[in-house]
Image (cartoon, rainbow, N blue to C red; front, top):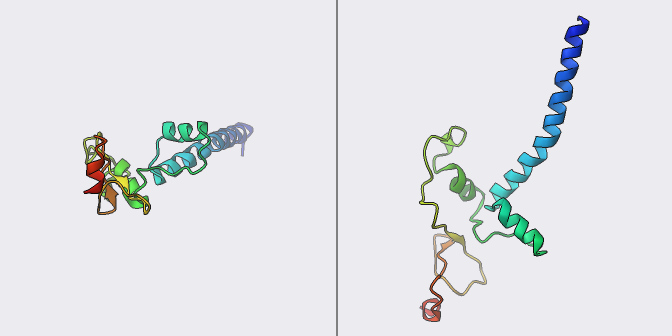
Length: 122
């Protein structure tokens, strides 16, 4: 190999190592956020409030979490061509076993927003 070829290969190696070491943890962290159906802001708020649970009320399981972000059809996850299935304003929340409030449907619960205690007893 010529000196110029070796120099270019070593520059490529250094650049790819640098980018991988910076973007690898960033990608891994966002995969973790996706798996837990959490935004970066929600994570930072939990960290600020010293809440070590890191449990999102919107975590409905790995597959459904990915569907919420990437869409309903898994073959199109790497080629996003359609919009989200929902309107982006209403989200199902995970049913907790100790939850006594909202009624759950299919593993999801709808949050009671009017504050009427009679709704929780129904």
